[in-house]
Length: 380
Image 1 (cartoon, rainbow, N blue to C red):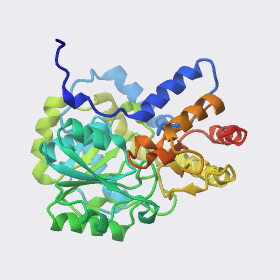
Image 2 (spheres, rainbow, N blue to C red):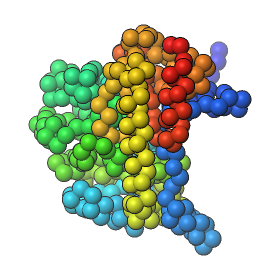
Image 3 (tube, rainbow, N blue to C red):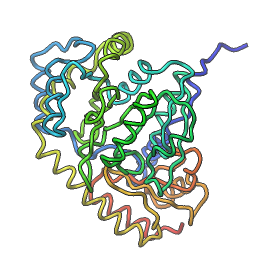
Image 4 (cartoon, rainbow, N blue to C red):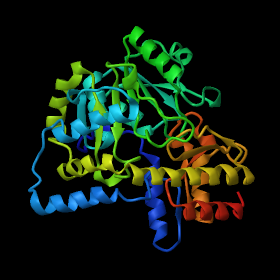
């Protein structure tokens, strides 16, 4: 008889991390172009790094408040006024250990085991997996290009009673965004049906068609998750934030105290400086825009003609059904034969992902051009 293993850990893997591990192993002997992971190739802003260096010399870096440094919470509140024209009080700001910590706190504070939370697929797989680990039922909303791979009120009407809805704009893996009118409609539907909305806004700042709209413009009952990992190029610093409904603040604080003690202290102090580095960050976005344009021009020449709307983020989600019905093996062959790493769509969509793959264009322009060159001579 073996010792018990808890069921909550028996969840699906985050496949992109498996792809990255295999690509890194191959990189020891082969030059691999990495288009699999949604991670900026740029470092943290120079002033952020300098602030961290200075702090290491003079501060013992103890715990902070569980809700985060007041100075950082205040600076983020100011950001909502500057960037969105929306007033959000400091008291509703919670600093988290990455957006991942934010999702855990959001789901644990808003939902009980057995609750039903809807989310669109294709979508970020960790939503489903964290909900499942917590005993919360993920309710899949199947979306297509017709809905621009985003949930609609009509689709929500078809899923039965739900307790929550997760949205993401720009989304991972498609990069599609929800416009202001449609977003307001989803918020209104949630309010009318007593559904708690969770809005993933971690790719805000990286948009190519129109500025992103925050749910904070329409709702004080929604939970908003954001991060320093994407636009602010601070992935490994493991820092994010939440805009929380007033009625959940104390619950979130108690959970944060017990689960995390506090977010990373060095990262919090340094992140205050990031809001003064907009020029540098916008140069990063300009490079993503160039990479996006290269792929949108070159991929159709290679036969990848069915592409999801690339409104924001740094991903291109491609229908490869004319080549394969097994995106996992397709990506494995691409990695081993063309030395280009991409992510199979099955990671983001358990129903139709076998027909899709995701390219990340968060890398350098030279990497993007080299990937296109390699794919042009690959026999797939």
